[in-house]
Image (cartoon, rainbow, N blue to C red):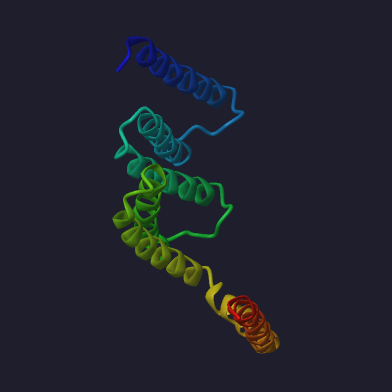
Length: 177
């Protein structure tokens, strides 16, 4: 690691810690453990992404995973999402590695193998989180209503496809004749 880069990183950490403690002393911001650990996760994610951009592609996994954890706990601790007990946010431990694998794929698109566990873990985690928020029933209701209302569009699209393929076939038959 470059010495200037290392000094910059340590300097930024000291500035952020000092500013947070100063705001706590001035009673402008409550700087307790509840507020700091999501920021730690987000800082780990930022440094992992910096390493990923500098050539260490495997750091992208940790950047995505810690970024998902940091965002979730930040939103939860400031009561922007209503999770209060461990049994309600356990799906995050499926979602975070899923996001990590998807991030790893974004940094190396030729590696399709990491996309499979990313989609499976991320999808299951998201599904269970939506279920914990009681949004699955609403989501299924919306999707079912949309399918029930708009299913005739499938017939219209099949008809358009048949007409276009017939026109294309007629063009090729005219050229060959």
